[in-house]
Length: 596
Image 1: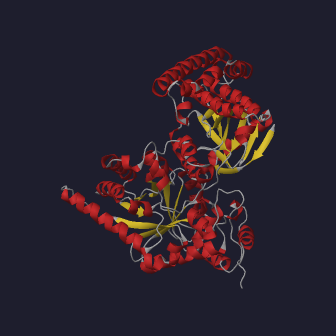
Image 2: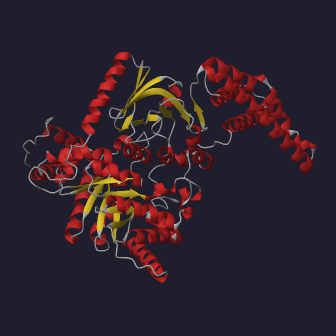
């Protein structure tokens, strides 16, 4: 038995055999039953024959076009296909380890490639490229037209736990989570979009494990604890029993109180608190309402683009999604964030990690918190695409409370430019004989420049939403996915708390609503502090709503206000954390606040 510790990003416990996905090479490895060995061997042979036919066709075509010398390049690849060191070795691995044929080919390739690494002959080094080409062709033919990670995971025989080097949000959104009970990855952080989506789907997940995809063999028994961040490999019967008991307790704890979801939420001293949900799909509305959400505080519209770039999302298609969303949430409000994508995502479909690996170097692909042409900047740079979305939103809002929110705003100029495009979209609908109502326009406060000019921005919009994840990252200049500095991503940093207070004051003075959206609202301790800072609206993943309701019902807003005033006088994160933890006992009771 072995225990690994990562970052728990989506609570819950999952147990089962491991299915290992190496995304960077697009290879899935999983154990196979004895009666499937012959089928995999037959598939391997069919793939070899198909590769031979394809290479011979390529060789003939090149010979006709460019002559025999250039065509001879493919002779080496044909010889590799017939050499038992690759296909023969893959067959041996398949039989001995009882793994799928595609992974056996990858294993055989790795063994052969390491031999080439140890020789100095330039000719043999060149043949290493041929070896990789042949292995890639074999894998492609083994898939029989199934190219994406989602395709490769469709034929699972039994439920499992997914272990991967990395997972993109688009892959997570498309997997069949009735067959995959949870996942663990080498990469990631708590505020990565994949983690956010996992919480929305209620899938237990642990990320940031560095090399878990290498350390766990396919088929190994695994337990994933998304609350503690622990992954147990080959657990003992006692450990497995304890995990099952914890899973039942966690389920009971997270379930909403019967009959409580529709009751207006107040603190112990009668302060009204509003909880909304962050979702990615219209299908999530029912779960959000059942958990106590009074509205949708953030609909991440870019998740509609899975499978294609934004210029492929037609107006009618978007309209039907937004209309379904507001109808299901009625009479509660729905806030739709316009596409929060960047120019790299526009350049190719948001299909899976294989595309990332193919088009972008590792250092670009792993860069988070992109501060380039994203959010409202992208919309203003691509007005045709932006207006298609705005027209769809205006149409969908008829008779319902739908609010439009611009992401990543950094200046008054961007707000005015966005509103101007909204006016153009309205005029274009009028020209088509479609009359639309006025619609509330808000912005996300995610960068320091917006927070510092909140009093100016408040004059231009109808509401604020504080995007705490990005605001923390950009205020502290910390890449939350970089292990070297991720420990400096500190929601309780005095600078962050002061910016929150400044934004709230600007909203109150102008008389517009302000809410907090992000991981801060999902933390019981931070939620209490935010209430003490005068914030009254929060939006979070549906899975955190049950916890948040309990916290609010046990909290005195007036007592928290005293506590928050003192916290804002403290100079370090350590001092703030120590004071907050000392201020609450296990029942959430408040303690006396010292004076300064």
